[in-house]
Each structure stands twice: as C-alpha cells, then as structure tokens.
Image 1 (tube, one colour):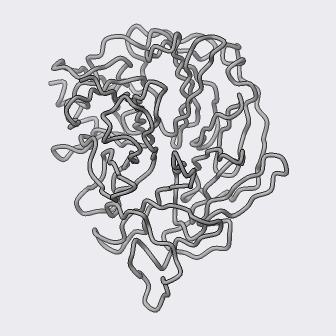
Image 2 (image 1 turned 180 degrees about the vertical axis):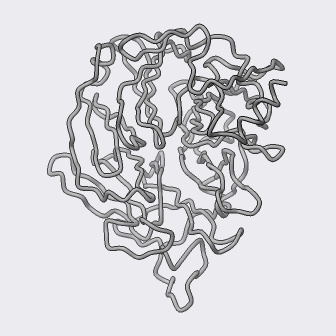
Image 3 (image 1 turned 60 degrees about the vertical axis):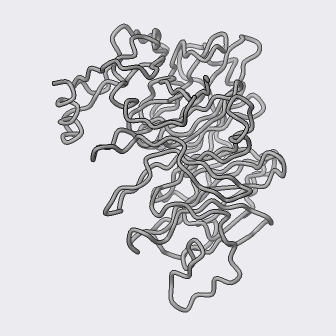
Amino acid sequence: MKKVIFGLCLLLIAGCSYNRPPAGDKVTNQEIGWTAQSGAIASGDKTSSNGVSRGNNITPERAKPILAQLKLPEGFQIEVFAQVPNARSLAVAYDEKRNRQVVFVGNKDESSVYALIDEGADYTVDAVKTIVKGRKTPNGVAFHDGNLYVAQVSTIHEFPNILDNLDNEGEIPSTIVYDKLPSDTHHGWKYIAFGPDDKLYIPVGAPCNTCVRDLPYASIQALDMTTKELTTVAKGIRNTVWFTRHPYTKALWFTDNGRDSLGDTIPPDELNKLSSIGEDFGFPACGGTQTLDKGADCSKTTMPQVTLGAHVAALGMKFYTADQFPKQYKNQVFIAEHGSRNSSTPVGYRVTMVNPETKTYEVFIDWWLSAGKTWGRPVDVLQLKDGSLLISDDYAGLVYRVAYTQ
C-alpha cells in the first residue's frame, strides 16, 4: 500500500509529495513509509528558531525504495548522509577549531543554502542549518580562505568567516562581491569554484538552445577577486554547470550539455579539457566530434576528451584522488548524470566514471531510473577527507555518501 501511495505521488506532484528520508540510511532490506505531507520534517526532528534541524539521524526506513534500486560495484556501500530539499552544489570545509566538518549545499529550484554540520568529523550529520534564505537560484557554493561564496544567476555573495558565524542566531551577514553577470535564467544558474590562481571561475550559459550571443555568454569566466575584472577563459560552451582541476596538471576539465532537438543520439554531452586560455569548444555549430550545422567549419574548435551519452545532462564532476577506493579508481573522473528531458527513451540518472588516460566511459552507480519511474536525479559529487564520496540528488532531496567497505 505504501508503494502505491508513492507511485500516486509521482503522478500527482502538484498535490502530493513525500517526506524527505533522514540521514544515516544504509542499504538493508528494510521498507519505507511515505506520506502526503509536503515538506514535513522527519518524525523526531526539531527545528530551532535559528533554522537548525536537530536529530536528523533517525530511523532509516523511508529511503529504502530509492536505495533498493541501486547497482554499485562490489564492495561499495551507500547511505543517506542528509536530507536537503533540492540538493544541488556541494562544498566542504573542515573546522579544526571546533573539530567538525561542514558541507554546504546550494539550491536551484528552491531559495536556500544549507550547512550540514558534522560534529567530531565522524561522517554523521548532527545538524542541518539553513544559512541563506529567500534567494533566487542560489545554486553555486564555494569555500575559500575561510569565506563562503554563493552564486545566484547574476550575483556573487560572500559570507565572511563563515565557520565562526554558523552558530549565530539570525541571518548570517554577507556582502555582494560581483553583480554584473547576465540575468538570463535560461542556463543561468551557476556553479562556482576557485582556481589555483585564487580567481573565481564562473560559467555563463547560452540563454537558449542554439542561439549565438556575444561574450560572456556560452563561456567560462574568471573573476579577479581584487580588481573585480572578468576574463574569458573558454568559449563555445553551451552550458557547463560543473568543472574541476586535474590533480597533477591543474588543467581545467568541465562537462558541457549538448544542444537539443536533433534526435536521441546527437549531439553527445562532453567531457572537456582546457589547454590554453580562450579555446573555442564549438557551440552551437559543433558538438562532440561532429559538425551540426551545414557549412560550419569545426576544424579549429577543441574536441572533447570524451563524448558522453547524448542528453544525459552531465553535471557535477570530480577527479578521485583519495586512497579509500581500490587503486583502479584513483584519478578517475566521477560524473553525475542528471538525466534526460527530451529523449524518447530516458537516459542518464546515474553516476559514471571516465578514465582520463584511456578515455573509457562506464557506469559507477545506476539506479535512479527503474521500472519506468524516476527515483532520483544526481547533481554533484564531492570527495570527503576519508576518501568517501557525497552525491547530491535534487529530485529526492537527499545527499548520499558512498564508501568502500570491503
């Protein structure tokens, strides 16, 4: 009966949604209970006046139907790290003064940024605090030199000394560090990250499917935090929402979502590497290794390192640099594929893995799409200090943790 209720919820989203499963949920053969109370806090949780939800690690029962769909390599275990509405971008900070780990989580379709507070840094979330409220599309989060940076569509906010202010009552103070980015919401949400040059790297998507617009559209920009000047780092990029650095060369690697309306198989999403400032990656006329528009010259565009599945919506990505996973996983690129919107057969809804040397592309976790149902949509991946991985899921409102236990 409970599964029937869940199925109806998926069909009647406007009138029914499920309670977010709690943290601490590990894969066992237990069942889950669903309710029709939208946004309700799990039984046993309490929310204080300063926005902190306590007692988050309670019974794991309600996440079982989601986790029951998973397919992981042998020896790996997945658990629910925390419940966060519309969980998107992830950033982590280690608070040595208070001996705790803090994971920051942004939103795209909601209006908040959350801090997952792990007292003792034992990989158990002790509190979830809403630290930013009422903002439009605060998707991007980055922690740098003690400060938290939050990106909305056109504006970057700085929250100084965030770790010293987390326990304060009321709203945490912030300042605007840049507010001159385009305001288009189509492909306008931002992922942000600091580079080894201490500049803040910011994508600006094309505000359309295939249109041509002047820079800074369809590019990656670097913001000098001192002069507040933007520099075009790469162009011809339809919509990259995530990027990272190679662990040794420090080269910028990024995912890019291919254009729509050309069928189920073209163009592919891409995994790209920037070799020199100002490279052109071909949008809109060139996609993958193909020329998409008749008469276009793609000979001078930079080809992808790896072509991914068409329309899989490749988003978050990270090189795995830790030693917890078996050695064959070292320095592989983990990619969250959010899932297709316009394929006749849905694709994506998984976490994949790319070997940057051999260019192999394979599935790491595959379970978010099963039996014709969407169980979740992975968004970002983040490596923690112990070598485990966090995966955000904006559809289920969860952050998962994957560890190797064998």
